[in-house]
Length: 75
Image 1 (spheres, helix red, strand yellow):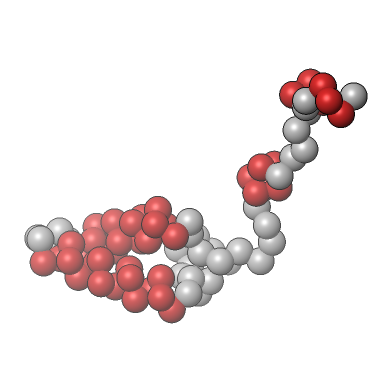
Image 2 (image 1 turned 90 degrees about the vertical axis):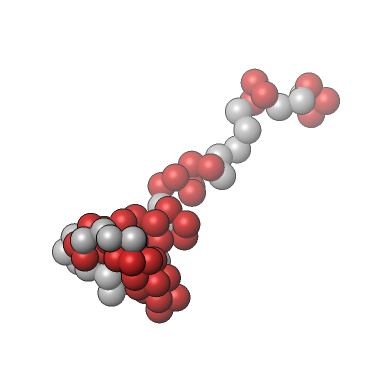
């Protein structure tokens, strides 16, 4: 998927981006800049487009607690 491809975004995310883009244009921001800002805002709010696989950051957050931090009662 090339950079800038919006096909993996949900329809809700696309609607949000369109609405945000219109708001920026009403404030006098150019079309290109309004589109960039709109997608940045959508990515910030929703975490970006849907992904087919889990990200590395998710799997690292599920790591077990190191032995040094576990309670002594289990030893």
